Length: 155
Image (cartoon, rainbow, N blue to C red; front, side, top):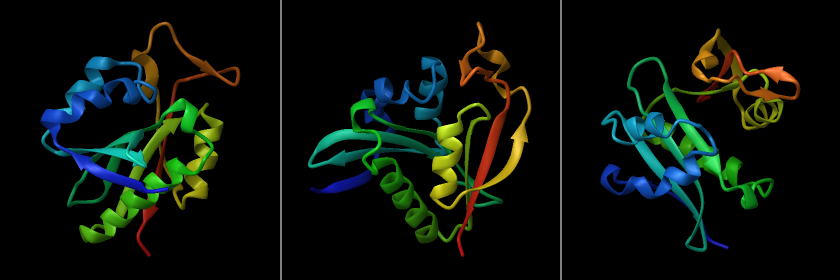
């Protein structure tokens, strides 16, 4: 089994949109990030088959940020998300950068556990981040309101 997580040129990244919609419900929000020159899009493949996608805003200041990361529903719980994060963490080191942020809803309990298992630590809360979603969404009986930002630091 050959796993790879490689950059995709912005001009070709549109094919990742259906997969990235699993991480964000706003198609226009995703499109704006795909064509943002400060962001890089990645496709994760296993034996050539697309299984995941990510978009990272690489910054040379305080911290870079994973804007979106998604694994295809049928491919989840097989370790691919962790492998994608490991690839991005390795690129962080290669770029000589020291920190990587990722955010998830405070109600996304599985995501919070996943990121912490991958070496991220809770960093800050972005209150009322999800107010733009109408009608509101709920997970585990909790309304999506706040974004929890987690931070990975190179040791």
